[in-house]
Amino acid sequence: MKMNKLSYSIWGIFSNKNKFFLKNLQKKLRKDFGGPIFPLHLTLSSNFKIDHKKLLIKMKLISKVSKEIHLETNNFGFKKKFFQSFFVNIVTNKELIYQKNMIDKFLKPKKTKYFPHISLYYGKISSLKKKKIIKDLGSYKKKLLIKKLYLVQNDEKNLKWKIIKKFNL
Image (cartoon, rainbow, N blue to C red; front, side):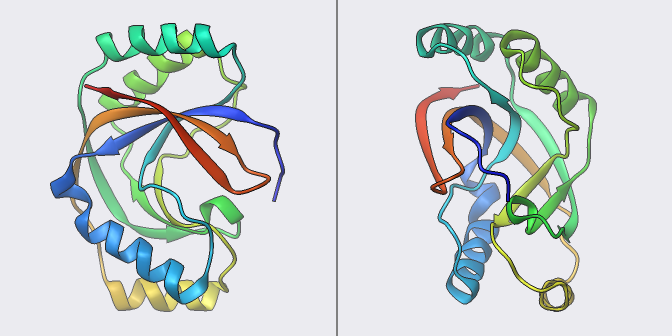
């Protein structure tokens, strides 16, 4: 697990009707396997460091030109990475890419490959256990709606995320 200093990220937050099942699954995974507590979200952009005041000004501009984002899920997935341990796959679409590119244009994050997903668990679980969880859950193909953006301060070393400000779309 790579330990970064404090940085910021932009999270897409789902409408309440969309997140009930996923939030309950997230709680169950945390109860069964431990791991840090974090809000259910889709990271739209991350890994940028910018002056706090400038960041808030840019986020206000971003929120004014942003619209709700319609997404589709494509089942559950997992990796051997701490922060991508167990998640919901997201189908990449034009709305999502447009929103990400617009945010990145304003905030100029360190370039990384974008992997859209909704993390349900951060931590270490064996691949066998993850496969069993996915088999027991079955397929998960739903439509989701992002209705808010959160500006978040990340402290990955201490596994803490602080919501700085919420923006309605």
